[in-house]
Amino acid sequence: MFNSDLFCNYKKCHKLLTTFAWVTSCSHVFCEEHGNKAFEQDKKCPACGLDLCKDYDVVKTNLNPSEEFKSMVLAGLKPEIVLDMTTRSLSFWGYQMAQDKDYHMMMEKHWKERSVELESSYQILMVKMKNDREVDSKKFESLQTEFEILTKRNKELEEKLCEKQRLIQTIKSKYEALRRSSTVDESLNCLTRVADPESFLQFRTRNKPSCDETSKHKVLAVLKD
Ligand SMILES: [Zn+2]
Ligand SMILES: [Zn+2]
Image (cartoon, rainbow, N blue to C red):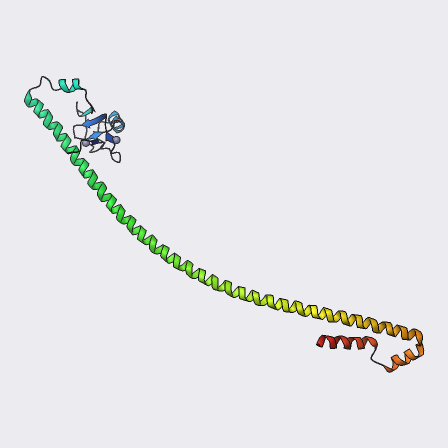
């Protein structure tokens, strides 16, 4: 069974023709849109560039002729004329079928080449993605190692901070104890001064360094502990 469809010969159109077609004496056929555009301006075939100036070089054909038309169009003509017309029509048809076959072969070749190009692009893309993934993986491992080092360092710093805070707390406690002790000494001095000022003066003269210096020594002793 042969293909009985006609397609527009205009470049990049290839529309299926179902109702009307512009048919040329150079055996080309066009859809209404491209036929109207081409043959209204100049009488050149859009497919092969042939001049189509003579009568019947271009004909607009109804692809679904009525029964009346089919009965009458060849009626009255001699059989040899009918056969000649039929032969020319079949020759036109054969040329169109050959063109359609060439078109499909060309398209098959085009899509095969395109497929090879796409396959090549796909392979290149896959290699690039694989390389990118490896680079990202190495980056991730490096960042992870850096993060682990920083986490460890942070933990060490936290431990040192806690130790310092404990030390500050201890110093504060010792300072408070010392301060309370110094306050008691001062109170005793005051009481002695009021009760026996003469003895107090003698005591101060004999017992240098002063009470303040004694306190400093006490503080230094506590801090050393
Ligand atoms: Zn067309
Ligand atoms: Zn042509």
